[in-house]
Image (cartoon, rainbow, N blue to C red; front, side, top):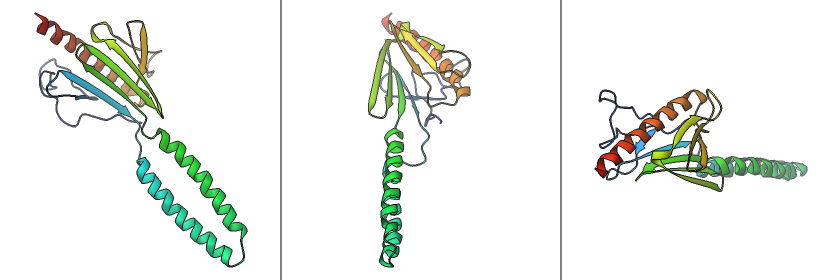
Amino acid sequence: MTAASVHAPSPAPWPRATQAGAPAWRFAQQADPGVAALEWLLKRNCSMSPGQLFGIYLSLCAVSLGIALGFSWQGASPILAFAGIELLLVGAALLVYARHAADHERIALARGALTVTHQHGRLVERTEFRAAWVRVEPAAGDGSLVELSGDGQRARVGRYLRPEWRATLAQELRAALRTHTLISDLKQR
């Protein structure tokens, strides 16, 4: 499982990787060019979308039922029943896959708030933190999920990243929170 990477360099007010000492955003994207906002979209690495999967399943059904009807016409009628059972079981397995193909985590940092949205199937969990009070720590140790805590709430992120990249995500979140807090403080003065 991998995460979405930056599609384009982040414009101001966020620091660019080419500036001395500025953090390089590996996973973040500029959410809205007019607002100082960053967004991390971590999702499953799926080879097929649910729509593509449905098309392939329909073609599999047509081929399998065509072959089964041919044998049934030649007098081997139980093959049609077995083909139907096979297609129902394959369809059920593909339905389970398709239900979780769009699972993702979205972390958004904007207007003094860090919002974490985790979609798992039809279940959507949303947690919002004040950006200035968020702590970013590993949940257990090296390679574990990244735990965000603050305001009496906790959220774990990084499910869809390889374990060795989670530390990078944690560092990136810390740097973005520091930068966001500095920008907010400068705007208030």
